[in-house]
Amino acid sequence: MDYNWQDKLILIVDDKKMNYDLLKTQLRKTKASFVWLENGALAVDYIKCGNKADLILMDIRMPVMDGIEASKAIKEIRPEIPIVIQTASVMGSAFDEISNSKCDDTVFKPIDAKKLIEVVAHQFEKYAGI
Image (tube, rainbow, N blue to C red; front, side, top):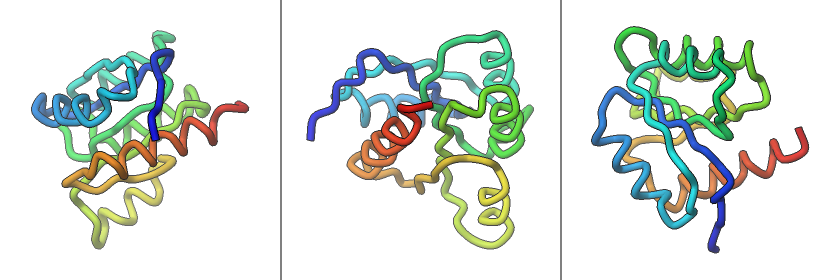
């Protein structure tokens, strides 16, 4: 299925530029726009300033502020923005942290492009009426 998200801006929060480049490449056919921020604190500030974000792809493990803390803070400011956690952590306390993060969905690394697009599409549909 082809998606045309040229009116959508996806905020990618990850401390590794390589991960940003990979996600951007996996989503390039959707025609979405992207902004990259290197940690959760920058993402919270970005949202606090009223900048556009239609969806956030949030890594968990980052310096300054991790993705769990950032997700909670962002949902307090703008609960209508879907947040999809991206992580390699799937067990134990990491699973509990994700469950309590107020995020809307999770994709697991290594990220499958087809699954990523399905998750993003689902979130856009879910939040369309908000």
